[in-house]
Image 1 (tube, one colour):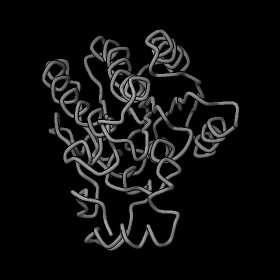
Image 2 (cartoon, one colour):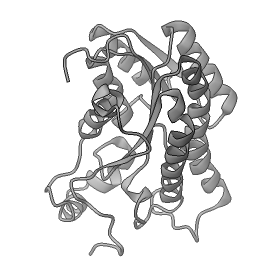
Image 3 (cartoon, one colour):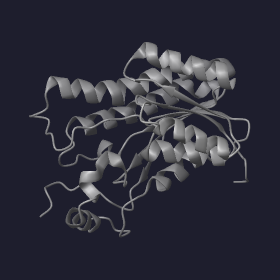
Length: 260
């Protein structure tokens, strides 16, 4: 892929204040795309900082605070990105939450709704709002964030794994419905990535070492490992891929029982 191969493209990246979303937003900008960075939190300055980093790379950027679990907020977010940046070519759905350690039997209705509203409904709302614009353009590219535990069950992930499995079917169903409009829809399924999202898994040296023993490649992922694959899916290098789920896990599989 050549330099600036996404020049002239506009992307919306949700959950891009930090972690994987931030890395994807920066990687797309490095490839030449203009980026609307979006997150439910803005007052800590991180989201605006990401937008500033993107502008330093020579791309246009817009920071938007939006709670993706609320459909009106999503529609406002997408319309603002369209008005300010002119079009929407790429949507990356990275916004997500989880309740660490909670089993399905212990999962409260409140926590179930929190996870499903953000992860699943939020992804759907963003796909609907941006997808309608892409249908009018007769082109577009949607990348949804699933997880390795969306493919296989994992210890201590509860409702999160259900939401990520549902995102896989959402991706496949949308890919079928939107293919005739020249819109591709794919999903990423990362394993354990070192972000603030899951510090309990990797910041403690003992826990980190125990987890790494289950990764054949011998290390945990960093956000850039996921971002580079997202850039590939956003580019014409993946032009004949749709409805696919790409695992990025170093060979890791979720353990079926607690590790000792």
